[in-house]
Length: 432
Image 1: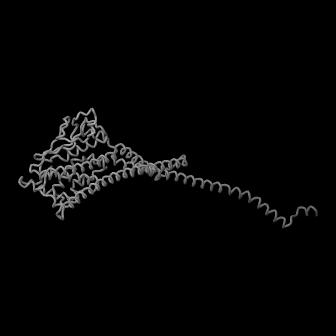
Image 2 (image 1 turned 60 degrees about the vertical axis):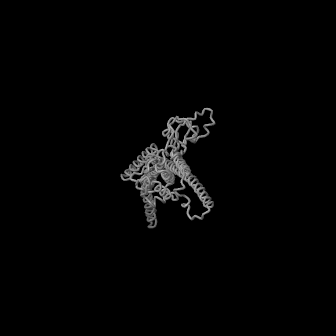
Image 3 (image 1 turned 60 degrees about the horizontal axis):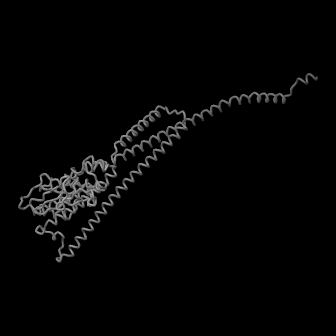
């Protein structure tokens, strides 16, 4: 009985044993199955993170390259005005190289070849490159704005001088009107052909000298902004001349302007081809009418009124002769003014306005010369090395007389002199 009882199992105990057996068999199997799944999940996340870092590094390289292109293009624009051939070439090479790099990055992306051994380092280096490019762009922008500011300051100074000159002329006209006993309604009536005399010519010459001096000041300012070597430029006009003061270089530039602008002064047509030439008997009245027609008008107003006039042709011809294409391109970065002048238009620039004012004063002086004498006025200059004469010459650098080493020799003629009938108008010379 005992043996049978010891070997026999109750139903409840049998079910409990089977349950333990199942638990013991299932748990190890479950642990073994989950381990590969967790490992596979971690590997996918790592690959996604790595691909994201690679893409971030790739995008950083793209933006850094774009910033380099932008900085190089800004340098290219800045080097064009004033004209800097070396700067243009250097910036152009950088633009080409960076665009080539962008093309390579594009091909790498399309072919899915954006591997990088150290993407974190690439991101840092790209950020550094981008910041350097941005700093360079800002620096170039600052220089450009500084140049534009200096140019505006120069224009302001020029316009202030013009305003002061206009105010002086207005006061002079007002004084003449007040002193005139007749109540004339127009200042034109105060001047007649019969009342002209050489003093009118001298007065007009002084006005011409003021306008030329303003034009030369503006030219020198533009040359300084364009980093010209003013000493070399002055020597090219007046070689072998030693200036006592650097400010005296302006006289060399003035002599060049007078030489070009006064060329043909003794001819009734004054360098204007196809201009009608009146008979000698009517020449004085003809030129006096021309003088009065332009005297009280601005150059732009007169050209707009008569775009095909002899004065307009004179302006176009003298500008193209005075301002060389290379000079215009160097000073202004383009040939826009030249193109407009060639087309017979009036450029809306401060420089051309100053030139037109000088052209107007010289044109009026020419008209006065033939109004006073039907044969006009003959010009004269003093050869270099000639002795100074107070009768025929006026010295522009009078401080030279204070030097004991003064030789009183003419280095060059700045403003030509004139013989008008029996009257002589002194020339202006620079002494060495």
